[in-house]
Length: 261
View (tube, rainbow, N blue to C red):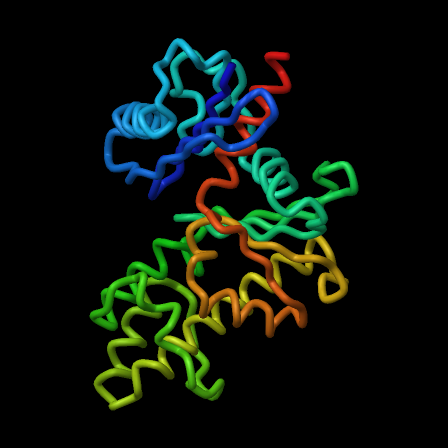
């Protein structure tokens, strides 16, 4: 039998299918859009198509994310904190601290030896430093958001943004461009600002993070510039799984498998 995990976030809806051993069979990531019910169906159907399965092969469904209560037929609806911790331990089993930066919130978790969440902190009151923030900054720089991660290579660490508020930071970026500041320097400043904000969040769950095995999940983990800046801020290497977007959905699938069995 197979188990389906769905993570319905603000930017993407992620689906993961695992088998009886807990191994990933297939996954899909689709934009959430304005109608998350349709996104849920698209992500589920695409994951099933990639796995070569029909819906009848799925024994249980686990749901997480903002839209977890809207998943039809879900056996369990679990918080993102629990699902990300479970998912990252399946991918990088010795992870002690996890940073998850999604579309509109940031989380830091201290994870115990059995994969349990010992402490967590979350910033869901402001989009600063999240995927939405990076989208706005990419627009201001007139580049694709996927390009930001490599734009800062070779830049110095001299530029510091005065505000992390999305509105004010966008205005500041526009002013810096008008003043002739090089785009790589601006990108580096943005990544350092996100890292500094995230470092504060991590310190709330583990002041000794520099000596821990730290991993990162969520869509922003694909931004190499943010990962590098966070590693510098925390004083340690940041590990990123091959598919950081699906960590929460994987955790939901594994929890559904556990509950069903």
